[in-house]
Image (tube, rainbow over all chains, first blue to last red; front, side, top):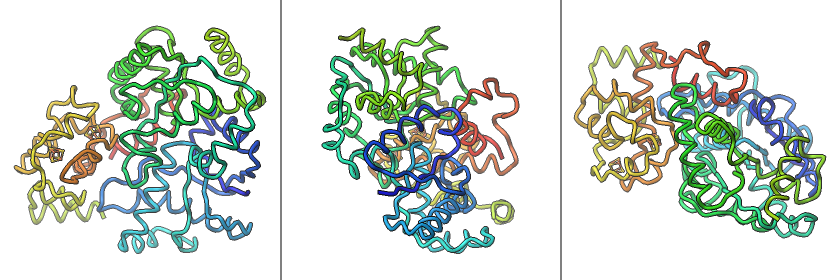
Length: 289
Length: 134
Ligand code: SF4
Ligand code: SF4
């Protein structure tokens, strides 16, 4: 199956371990990921204000380019893969706004140059959804060679995959998608109050002190329940969880992994993990055996 | 569009609640002051006015909502919007209040002064550009 892919800035810059492992994992399941020839930053957060259109222009342009490339390559499934939670949220929200709001269609046209019109068909899909819905957890199970038995994991969804409800990939109040996958890998997801909570996001540029405090609280809560690592799919959550620990405790008590890294490990496909990440994970697993 | 709106608003002197409605699309008069938004808000402990109080200030056309620190501590986590029993998208009201400030060409964070600039995920920088600069 061919899948068009929108990477976004962050997985190309500070979350390269996420891209490497996620694309590797999909390849193992016969998914042919094709990166868009042309893409720009999604803009992060489609506009929450209703009276402006410009924040919706960047995501819609990306969707237009996806539409054109799908036509050119005769890919008919209309999917557009994202890894970053924020990109997923921004592109999906812009798409929905475009479908619901006639005004925005007109106003976006005013911003475009020679791009074709967006037909509203692109189905933005997140990596976690691909594993669950297109690959299937059963298929994942069949291919496992390593069991993560004994590893207690604190899953951290963050906000962007769950809110607003209209774009949520799982129940915003009680998401289980990540936990289900972790259980299949043999790991043990903990239950703790911060699972679908906010890491304080971009507040890190304005009030890092509050962000460190927040992420120390999250870490303590996970530690109390025996977790050994965090797992997330959001590069900003990953950053805040890690830097929060460094700044609040002076060291990292709970390393942060992307869910795809654990899957790659469980598949025995170490080439999809960065060396330092692989040895860190191995060490932790040796410790819990 | 924004500049146009700004001028128009000045000329016709809309009240704050009306401006917020125009910018965010949200009607704050639906609020029943139940406080659920505040109960879930991760930033509420540090806010000068809590989310339900911000909504109330807007309802009273009280400019303290625009000048509050709370709107800059809101992380747009959208949990308040998820929980509001009256379906008020509180996160959008927060954004509209920020927009009123920022459209006066106010910057709340000087991006060039940030430490860790190289280390920060680009998404944090872009979001800050969006949320904190005019
Ligand atoms: S949750 Fe909704 S109804 Fe309740 S106080 Fe907040 S805005 Fe008002
Ligand atoms: S969106 Fe803002 S006001 Fe609402 S719960 Fe999150 S931080 Fe609080």
